[in-house]
Length: 108
Image 1 (cartoon, rainbow, N blue to C red):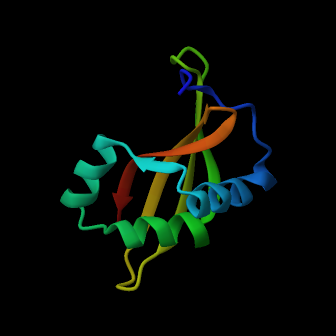
Image 2 (image 1 turned 120 degrees about the vertical axis):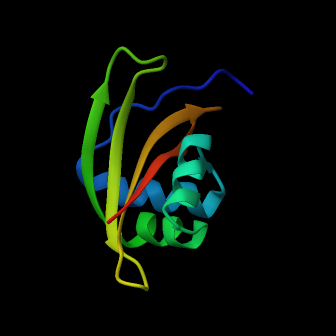
C-alpha cells in the first residue's frame, strides 16, 4: 500500500456521491478520536453510517499545512431518538482510490 495523500479537491455537489462510494466499497474508517467521542456521546456505528449517507453536508475546515493537507467536511442529521448528530470526516487517496476517515462525532 502506498503512503496516503490528500485527496484532490472535491466539489460540494460531489460529497454525497463520494461518501456513498467509500461506504459501499468499505473504504472508510473511524479515527480513534471519533471512536472515543461516539462512545462518550452514545452514538452508534449505525448512527454514524446513517448520518453520513442521509445527512446534510457542509464544509468544516481546510487545513493546507496538515500532513497530508486535509479538507474536513461534516454531515448532520437527526437519529431515531431525535438527537442531532454531526459527523466530521475527510478524504485521503490510498492506492489511487478515495478513502474516508471519520474524524469526530458530536451529539446535541
